[in-house]
Length: 174
Image 1 (cartoon, rainbow, N blue to C red):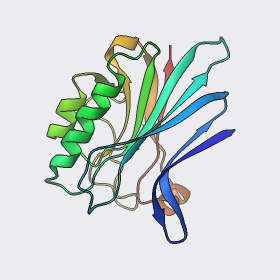
Image 2 (cartoon, rainbow, N blue to C red):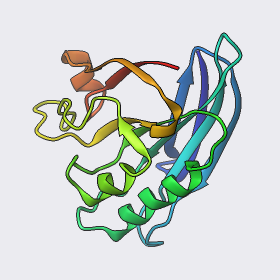
Image 3 (cartoon, one colour):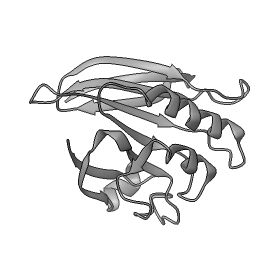
């Protein structure tokens, strides 16, 4: 697989941020800083342009929005993501830890442009050892006409040990 890493912050002698793995060629990769309180952790959206076997290009973006529950920063971050991808000429997929439950104001902002691959329901992803909320998403732009084949939570002992979030998997056709 091809890999790309987007640094958000320095962390314990290394870096912390977003990563993308692709079995298809990654043609370009960019990191965009999102709005936020400068005293708190910097948040980013990382995007890669990926070429599918039929030469179709798609943008895959990943993010980790602010974690403070009453944060206005998260609302600004969601609005900035919408602004960034509203006019993209190629199809876009957005995935990540949005730190927001489906009925949140953050998801209401994102729902203007995006559809949740698992519908408005879907599985619980956090915490991995005893999930009680959905805060991780794979979103597809409404205008791109993706076909969701299936979406599922990947559970099991290994998933629970690898992260404090359960992995979310979506099979999409364009």
